[in-house]
Amino acid sequence: MTELSSTHYPFQSSEQLNKRFYNQFKSEHAAALRQLSGASNEIEGRAYITTLLLRLMVLFFLQAQGLLDNDPQYLWHRLQCAQQRSGPDNFFREHLLPLFTTLYTGQPTTAHHSSDFGHLPRVDIPLFQPEALELRSPHLTLLDATFFRLFNFLYSYHATRSPVHGNGRSTSALNPRLYL
Image 1 (cartoon, rainbow, N blue to C red):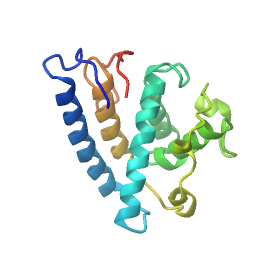
Image 2: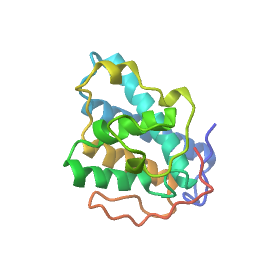
Image 3: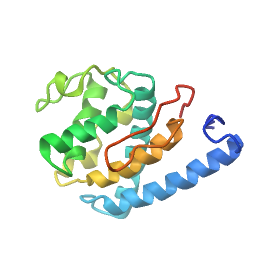
C-alpha cells in the first residue's frame, strides 16, 4: 500500500492520505476521461486513462529521483517546451507518447532525436510499451489543460510546498522522501 510522507500533510495518518489520494485519483481519472478523444468506447477509454495515470506516476517518481535529464520538474518543463515549439495541445501526441516509447526501448522514435528528451534511463517495464489504442488511433488526443491538471495533482503529492500553477510558475520543491 502506498505511504505518503506525513511531512506534507502532518495532521493526517497514512490511511487518511491514501484515502485522500485515491479519491482525488478517481476524480482526476474521470476528468481526464472526459477530455480523451479517439477511444472507440468508454471501457477502452477508462483502461487507457488508468494506464496513462500509472505511467505518469512512475515518471514523477523518476523525475523526483533526478533520473529524467536530472530535472525534478522534467514533465512540466517539457510541457512548456512543447507549447512553445508546437503550439498548444500537442504535448500528448508529439512529446509524451514518443517519450514513453523512448523510455521503453532506450531509443528515440524516428521523429525525435535523443537531444529532444535529454538524458533518460531505459525503463524496461511493459507499462511503457505502446498501447494498442495509441497504435491504431492516430486521432487519440488529450488537451494540454488535461496535463496541467494531472501534473498539479501529482505534484501535490510529491511537493513540500504548492504545486505547479497554470501560469507556468512553480513554487514546489520536491521532497525525495515521497515515493509512489
